[in-house]
Image (cartoon, rainbow, N blue to C red; front, side, top):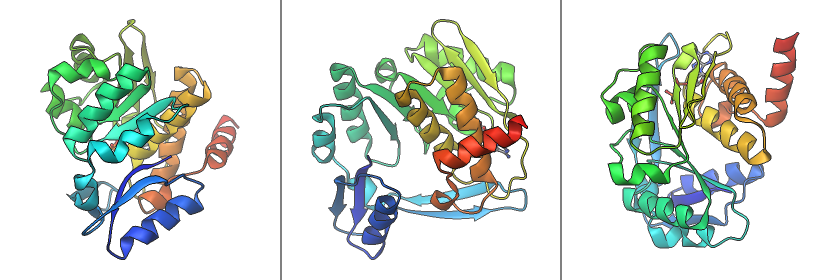
Length: 251
Ligand code: ADP
């Protein structure tokens, strides 16, 4: 289920139709006067991207608009990121904690999360630049990523994953467990949505009951498939494609 907002522009109904055609429940996507959220993306020859974001309707999403989601009976996990109003994220964090709902958080675009809210996050997934902004530590090596993740855990987050692009990802848990998951070696055409695909896949796996180490491999495979294809949303693979890719890789 997706919660959020679209605008009253031509993109609004189109965005909803795309989600619905993928079988995503959009009952909690509301419509706000004005434009939909827009991302202007440039991709260089190596497949790296630069994104200029216009929050549009997402920026107008208020706590009242998402109240209904938190009141649903069987919510196992909520995945949030920073394209909506910060006050709404803060509301979701507090409510989810009170109701025992697992919260996965991808702080993109990067903003500093107030320290007193870090213990509301069960799993924080962040890339190198988000890690640097939140911790002041440049996560340019596995060691530095681990140090950054440990500083976030010391500040209250339960589990942290630092994604390192083509170098893979590092998971650190407050229990002391550390798991490094290499990226699959693929030809990157367009890395847009690699992080989004990674965390989306992870959320799906964890709610299905997959153990973390397996969920990490699935997420790595899903995002490898995403970077092999052009586009953002259009490059995100289905579960079936991920399973097939993993079978092929296993030989
Ligand atoms: P973001 O898109 O948020 O910047 P990353 O670039 O760290 O996130 O990518 C997230 C995950 O996607 C990585 O941990 C890795 O598993 C996968 N990935 C990213 N780039 C590549 C690549 N060039 N080849 C294979 N996998 C990749």
